[in-house]
Image 1: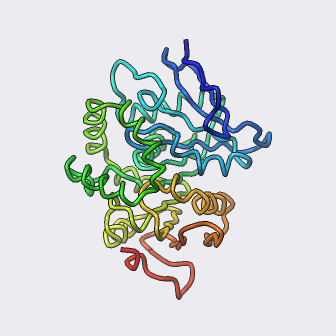
Image 2: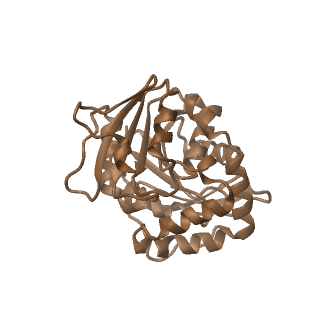
Length: 297
């Protein structure tokens, strides 16, 4: 039997349980989306639940049929007998969509959620409409584990203090053994290969204060290999957990991306967004006087 829900839900989204592959899985969903609203699923990062994604998801729930699952083994969802690697989590995300009756969706990921999206697109290209990759992690820049832990420690000092209260219970529940196994899975995952293989509209959002991200020079190098409709947005003042720290700015960027409108800054939200078009090896700001991403270092 699934555990009881808290008497006072912590989110404006409805809190639900379902059973998938014989395991209880916890998720949140929009309560009253428009009948024809496109599906949007938010995927959390390493060791975390979907809780820290809620500030952004809640701002979009009235425009999209929104889902925020705790993937198997994370958050309040039950751990499978064998910990899932990145492909396993991607397949679990697809089965969750089946469970919810969603044939396709736009996937919004943060950190580890981004490799999961890339793997989902690799196996289920017909089921992903668009990809939103926020602070993608898991590449060479985060190796070895000691370097990644140092990056996380530095990031912690740049995040809102409220994030500690949200993330700490998730990390403790995830455990040391699961952390080591998941880190190994991420380090062996071909993130760059999968990224270059994407053939759907893709939005990449980075924070200029994120110690887990590669340098702007490395971003430019990667951009030189892009052959896809891709937009890069840098949010000044943001670190790694952008979905939590800058929900207004991120939700504004996602809305414009989904509507195929030029990305412009939301003056009413903290942070300043600068957009660059990445397409066929070009890194072009939307206007001639737009600043270079190197300035965000």
